[in-house]
Image (tube, rainbow, N blue to C red; front, side, top):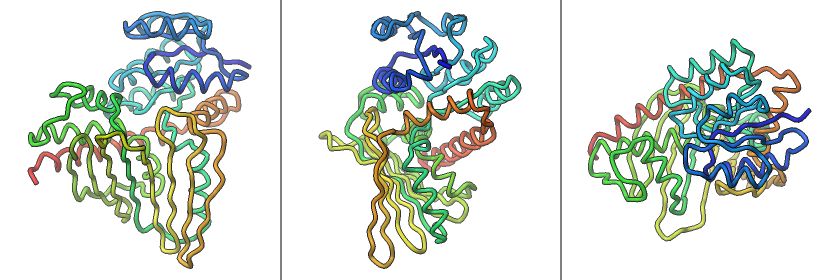
Length: 343
């Protein structure tokens, strides 16, 4: 059965990621309607694939030729659009990360989906990456407890993430370096990037260290970035992100150290289809093993997961989705408070 997808949003993620992904899954999904917020981009994207286009979410939700809604709008609109999709009788929702920007909105959206039996997937593509499944299996099978986790992102300047900072924390102009000497701006940068960028990897961290205990340090980094250290389930976690001037190649890596080995998961840059992440294991005895990469990436895997929820009757992990939001928002709130304190 082919499911008809209506897309709310026509930004770079839709053009570069979701439309090519859904084209690869044409036996399962067909995009029938794309809406923008007035930019005009929906018309050109829809014309390429023979879909309808409109402005605003209303026509997508009212379209009887749409049974799956893909929410790719700004984060503050996600929860409300999930509620609207449920009210419109849609069968399933794919929501780009984050699910919501606060727990109250997340709870309302998830409760509505649960009550109506609507399948819900949040697009945390790193969690769905086949490489994370292999890494998680290794960590479970190796027997060595996790003793530390670090996530390192070194990204070239990227307008999308400048916009994330602006949209979500915003007392400064887009595409300009924020004045990190102002405590409220430093705190806003930390909060915005934790909820808008670190959200790629926080579900993976929570998978290994689910109980957030305390935040040890939090600082905004110039030109745009952050460094946060916290302890969860007794495991120290360090998360460092910076957008480097000069356009260096992207590095996106999660390192998990156990009592027996070190595991590195290196993710491809965002906005590309480059297959799965790479997984490398360094054992204490010096052995060095790298797993083969899969042709499928997390973007394909997350849509396959939605199809399984719809067609296979698999249970939706509603509580897990809420716990991911709780973890991220609590970490962001605590970290922002620390970032407001001058060094």
